[in-house]
Length: 157
Image (tube, rainbow, N blue to C red; front, side, top):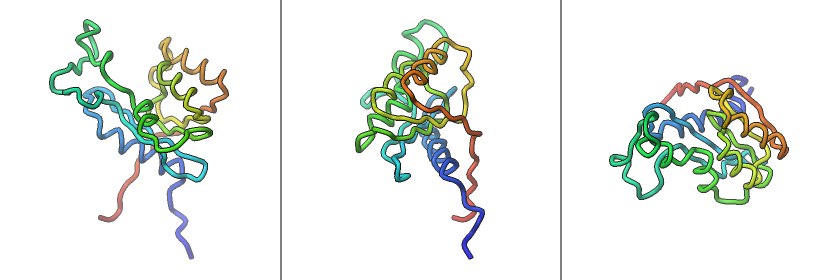
């Protein structure tokens, strides 16, 4: 008889997104994203960090202060990294992401053809950027679904 305690696809892909977020060097916010096609195959993956070729020891990681002395003008979010790292067309795919996308990411998600977003956290939902994001995503017909963060425990090495 087969096992019955295996994890769901949602748990699996959110676990991969969470694992990807652990690659981020951001001291305050680590985000991971995974794009999955209709056959449950990963076609893109990313995390938040500086662009290729930018020395992350030289640029700031601060999240407060003068804009140019913070991480915000320099960091690429997990969602665009997953889109840019994709290997195929993203039409009708699903994005699993550990944090609800901001308005800038929403524009790229919509343009890429992603049709569903499954997210774990939405801690900035009262901020204007995230209200704009939700508005655009809903108007573009992108399905939004929140699931609880998934803790995956490896039982054997």
